[in-house]
Length: 266
Ligand SMILES: Cc1cc2nc3c(=O)[nH]c(=O)nc-3n(C[C@H](O)[C@H](O)[C@H](O)COP(=O)(O)OP(=O)(O)OC[C@H]3O[C@@H](n4cnc5c(N)ncnc54)[C@H](O)[C@@H]3O)c2cc1C
View: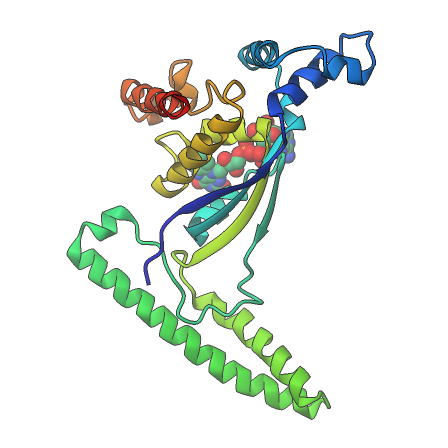
């Protein structure tokens, strides 16, 4: 069964711009912490944060974080996502503990648009599911027998046999298999992630995810993420001969994202 992207912003640091501005000002202030935190109003905090972001003074941005619940994505996507190691934490649904009977899967748009490719794709998913179910069954009976012979109770043996069976049967599951992951990233890590994954060179699926995450954080901390997105928004594309060659279109798309927030606010 087909599945598609859902991104939930579960939680985030309250008053993010105040926290960043307070942390940055503390470095240069003779006041105590409470005095420093309460020093400025929201407008001044936002101006200060904007200045820090524009100057690239990013370490105070590490004090605020955002937690996302992401579902309807493929295992290929999460393999790419978890490569972002710094300032990021992950918890992902386990294929060792959770059976993937009748798993959902992601269909790339190009596959969906080609009826022959789509039919091969769906057939391949059905075959993987059938092989997975059959291998699970076979391994389950092997393990249950051996575990009972080792003197385990029937209840324990069943539980252990199931886990042992599905953790090996999962090797036949496709990259397309739907997964769920909870991700927490600090704002500095998010800016880096958006630089790389909002770029047209990133694959369509993680690009869609990154843009949706950016849309959500812009609503919460607009000044932090004011110029967030692919690197070409502010400078010439750094990808050299690998450039997508669509800098103007990309800038327009991200300007529209900015305007969405302004329209929402009205
Ligand atoms: C378009 C695209 C194509 C890609 N293709 C491939 C591919 O073919 N194969 C592949 O393996 N990966 C590929 N990647 C993944 C890429 O190489 C990175 O692993 C991924 O983007 C995470 O980036 P990062 O390491 O900068 O992030 P993080 O791990 O979050 O690191 C953030 C920053 O911290 C610093 N840092 C982190 N770790 C270290 C360290 N050990 N030593 C010194 N500094 C460190 C660096 O400045 C780094 O940029 C691709 C990524 C993109 C966007």
